[in-house]
Image 1 (cartoon, one colour):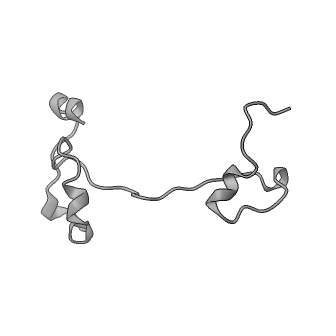
Image 2: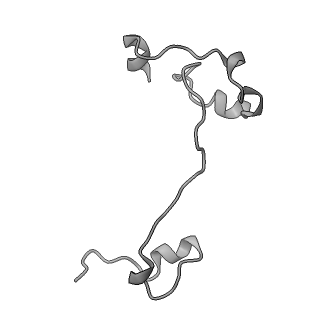
Length: 76
């Protein structure tokens, strides 16, 4: 983010003007020192995975299902 800031491509956010500033956890607002007031946490912890259900024998219901059976380096 330093390069963008130094090039003038981004400007500092006015924290008090952000509608959601009151619900952001302080630990995330100060986690990245170089970001300073030029960024906000966005989609922390959100992850989606898509798979083709027609290509798996059993529906995936847990994260561990991604690795069962163990992936191989070659598929025929």
